[in-house]
Length: 268
Length: 287
Image (cartoon, each protein chain N blue to C red):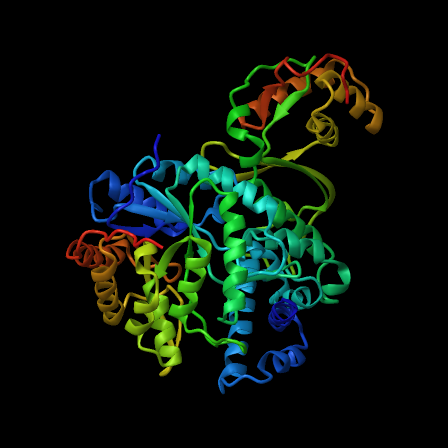
């Protein structure tokens, strides 16, 4: 089986390595098929083409800004090729690979945030099935003395640049407002479209605490206040109630955790 | 609910087809499409519109599943998380069988997202058979394996396509998902007679047949793209095969360059005429 293991290693390296001639020679050595070399190159071309297409589909605005994602994707293949059996995971895998030194020197400073935003939109679009989202949608009850249940199809993002306001047909010279910004990305339960809601810093802090899911809503608000140093007064309580109502309408705030399995004060 | 009965001609369910397919079904306009096939990886670990679409389709058609990522020929251990999720998905869908490919797609942790060929010999046949049995133990329905298209025969190959598939199926006891287009593509690319290859395959173990279109990259080199209409040769080879297997379900795969649904539907109707003219499904022979 060692031969088989070596064959498979060489084949994967042939597909992904920048310098692949050595692997090609290993794979073709002793072959009686005169077309072997050309055909191995066909496999390399097709695998790379398919994955590059998928990446460009996942990051259309990043591709528009950089003009060509291929140099980045080529480097990603060479240094850290995909690992997940799910093709759609290539977006998250590429994002993990992205860092300033793999970007062109001329790239705008907000490019990494744009990539993170595009991947987060996909993550929210796909989220839910494993977490039983369809079941928790039925909870519906508001009780601030219990932990809240938020839809798994949401994500709170903090951003330095307003990349979420960029149009689809943007270019590298686009003017991007500097923040900070806090966003709630969520999937509309009826249309399945992903929407972006801008949050105040206070609302974002509270939602981040609530999303941990282990403390009551009251405790989460207190934790956010301590972290971000804001007062819990009548105005804040009023604004918070409006936020919860709005999030419930949007299908983000689903209700309170059922009493079974939760003891008040249990903050594990 | 018992597993759905799958018979006749089906269509591979792809995202660009879903809305129109559902509309046409509501209007009673696609009666020849009797079942659908999905790639589980498109739905596993995924919420939102994907499971919603699948639920709507499942209410209207029986569904079979065809995986892309088991890497049955791989040397890495079978992916336990993937198999657990697949098991759950297949149970929920109540699919009568599940198929994947006689290939490897991952190695040493890297995933090619491609169907890569192995040397066709006794050693790799035994390797496949052992992994198929392991995978079968973790799935709720019968596992079938598909003969792949390949563009080169790796060093160390001593068996032809038919002998290799027969060896794997015999040793593992699994079913066969026979891709007639792949047999044709391989025969053209490697200079075989497709009927001779098919005659060596365990045709009594076939649970389902795939057909698809392909693309001539060079006059003597075909790429299995699933992005073109079926050619007459493949229709003829399908008819020849169904004469020998009897009426097993036939699936039209179209994965890219989607034409108007009417064009796909015309292909389904032609396949349906061939399927109906075939004899009853033949029983499996004892082994």
